[in-house]
Length: 304
Picture 1 (tube, rainbow, N blue to C red):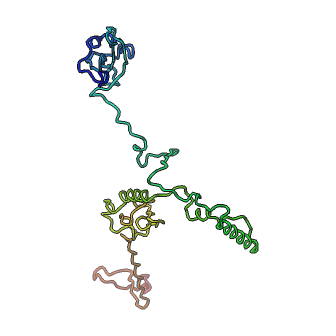
Picture 2 (picture 1 turned 45 degrees about the vertical axis):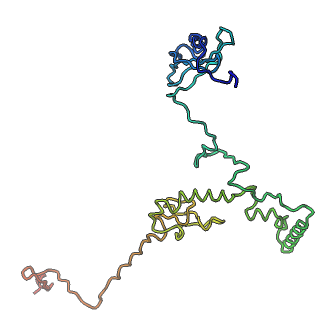
Picture 3 (picture 1 turned 30 degrees about the vertical axis):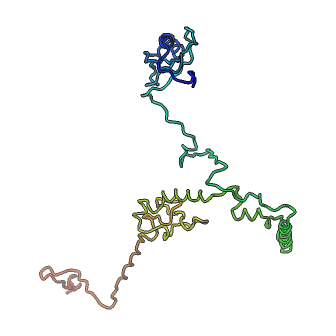
């Protein structure tokens, strides 16, 4: 190994003594008000020394100016290599840079944002893109064209508007079945989605642990299609904590449709009306006996 690639432990004497020369370089780069006291030297290699000066900039507390000087072999003239501002041990530095694909979290996207996916994204797999469609001279194409002609003729005989149709085309059938996409979810993508949904709205959540019943028996559950239909559904209870979200069938909350059914109040009994018994209604009760006596109206008027 050559001497140029090894790091000398002892700084070069002439380079180490060039403190004023290094300070002048730092002042020229940042100004006299930004350069503080000399902090020391560090040997970078053969006849290569770095001088450190404290910085007085409040925005760079703990940083230091690093001025690297060198000289030629058998030369006494010290020359400037570079002047940079470097962080010290107590400096406040930004965290290590992380690619955006690793920094992105659910919910970070906003209106107008685009989230590209890699061509080899493991969450996706090729769908039906039409690449497997038969050649124009294939017998399948001829059969499809014949089917289209028969359908058109039947529409003309029935009086309906005979318009060109692609009912017999493979592309139309694929689109009708939901297969007309370049890529679809792979098994890995389905498992990752299921794990996320199960974590947020699954049986192990505190809400589900305290629920009186599971979503599998709730009337507010909207079933989903596909391979996840046996495990997940969509909550449609506007008062529930998962309204409009995909929930596991073993999830639950207090808004279960059958958890607390309000009982129907009993109707009041009909009033009893006795139309056969006569009840006397005295006008003036007897104050002495405490009983009620009837008074002749003629006596009260003085006709007797």
